[in-house]
Length: 333
Image (spheres, rainbow, N blue to C red):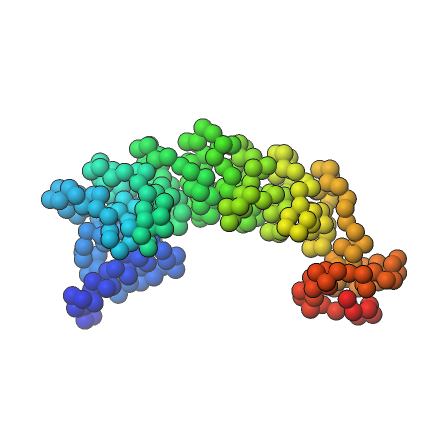
């Protein structure tokens, strides 16, 4: 294997650090296997890899390293250590990463420090780094013990973690006022159709009547769940915890109408059981039949109202063509 030149090694090390944080495909592990000299290149690679001995020694020689902000990314070493995926890429490095975080905190790193710059996406804290892509429960626990303060967006990102909800449980266990904090948090498990995540948040006090969607905008939780294609279990959980069954989404369509148009009779049944007003029109039933290519349902509606197809609004005509479905034996819509 040819040894990398100084300039190329610097570029490889920089790309390696970024892949160790942002890439979930194992690119960083492949880079290190191809060029092992990356590991010893710099303080930054030592932090990323959990090389506690080197990190301790370099901070001992230059204490300012512990809190120095990288000019390019806006990250501090603590952010990088918390965001590193090496506890998953090589589980043997998990204890080293935890120790690096401890060393940095002991040396004055701020567990609530926000970041800026291109890589920092302003406002990211070490805790947010630990629960997002890294999903590192050990580091999350340590940060909480050292005074890290969580926000709604931390709960939201923890909902996407591939850690069997361990980080989310840790956050909820340290949150005295989940009801007051959690607004966007439910959007993660709802979008994933994750009934366990929804259940955890609701049990901890998250209120589905105070719900923000993935864009951080107020939204009716039930409508959002139906739109995401949730299970009847998820919908039942939200309604059992006070979510309103009738609040409409954009355009005024009710959750029940949306479920019907989508052909989700299971969801429609749950909504009706929880007191949803039956506002489904013949046009909605006709549209649902077209979108499901259910010729019997389309013929049935047309038999009851032969002029129905001609009275559809332009919007409903367009919706009926979403999947370019034509139902044989029925007039074009």
